[in-house]
Length: 227
Figure (cartoon, rainbow, N blue to C red):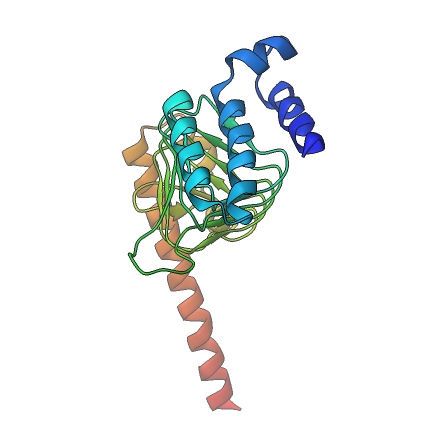
């Protein structure tokens, strides 16, 4: 327990550039307070002292603005920045080295008992205001943009943005390949464009990539028939 607490304090220095001293962190960091109180409440929950654990989480919510159900499983070096408005449900599972920002919800989509909240694998980062809902898994090193709504699994290393959430990193290589094929430097142009223009170009490249794949399939079928 003490090793975990020491790591929780150290990680604030590593991920919060505003942190200046250990005293400041220990006395004026609601995210850290929420995590430390949760570790106590989770211990009580595992010992089946459910009512005391729930009271503890209620007090932590009042003090920090962060609501973490005592049944949630949280790994090492978890970092909460600002904290206000965060909700983490009972069956949520968070692995090591994850970070979440204010307004994030790790929530459920059903009233049925059992696994109903998200699982975050190692080194996941979730931006402010994002909602991650249901018994889904966010793969290692995944990134969720601010205010995104995620209701499907996110692959390892992927970045997801928007409402509903869309994976953007997986498509990036395909778009670059198509842009290169047609002799158009889409990404050099789109960095300074307004979002609507960028979205149109990306949609065009996605559609062209799909058509290109369909043509390849047709070519293969025609070649087989000739043979």
